[in-house]
Amino acid sequence: MKLGDFLNTMAAKIGAQNEQQLISLLSNSQLANVDIDDNLANRMNTGLMSLDGAKSSTDVKKHFDAMVLNAIDAKLLPLAQAYGASADFDTEKSTYKRIDILAKKIEEQIAAAKGASADVTKDAEVKRLNGELQKLQQQLTSFTTDKENEIATLKSSHAKQMLDTLIDIDLSGKAYANKAVDAATNLTIAKAVLNAKLAERGALVVNDGGKLKLKNSNAPELDLLDEGNKPVSFASFADKILADAKLLEVSNGGSGQQTIIQQQQPGQADMSSFNDAVSSAMSALGSN
Image 1 (cartoon, rainbow, N blue to C red):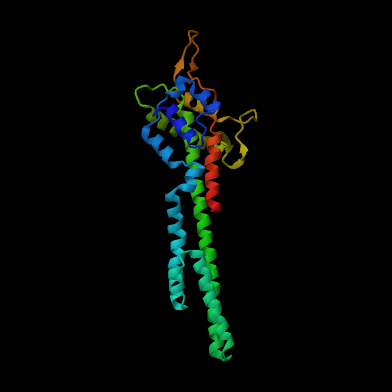
Image 2: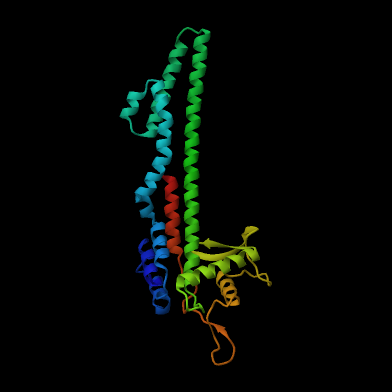
């Protein structure tokens, strides 16, 4: 797949395919015609959803329904049978309303036990029922926490996918020296070299609103600085690392001095709108 087609597909997810920034970016035919491995492009396309896509995704809904609601029902049904709420459970399909039904049934039995003679047996029954009610409330809290943790894991996974996508797009736009291998192989090699040097330098790459930035891995809130205490840009760092590894195409330019050949693109691709859409989609999951 061509990079231009891929970016158009991604932009269509947020309705930005006609925005001037994208049109200007893709007017560079050399950039637009860079090849992206079809498998990689398709995985990015299907793996990243727009806000509407996330809200409408049956896979997302089924995942959380199966993980949370079915698990709660499995715990509640035996209790419903024990406290005479089976008929109400069969009628009511909402898990959260089923919890209210069961709590009410337990409270009714507590009240009935308190209204009977206050012997040791009845006191023990009241204590047992109160314990069951507390256990039910604890289970609800536990299931809610599990759901929140699963959503957080999903958000983290999508954040990593988005970061990987931005890095792949940036590295795919470079002119590589080895023309004997395909674009996907050059990209794989470039990423391996870059990751090794990032680890050696104690740096990490972050997605800052759709832009790649370098941070200090020991203090991620701080920018990575050069010898002059100035922030190091991802673009300059990547270019130097790949050039030093002799992965980038160079030209003498008739002067005997070698220079790196760059794809004629206007800086790093602006993916901020797409990044915001994905972030909004992930945020929407936690509010439903």
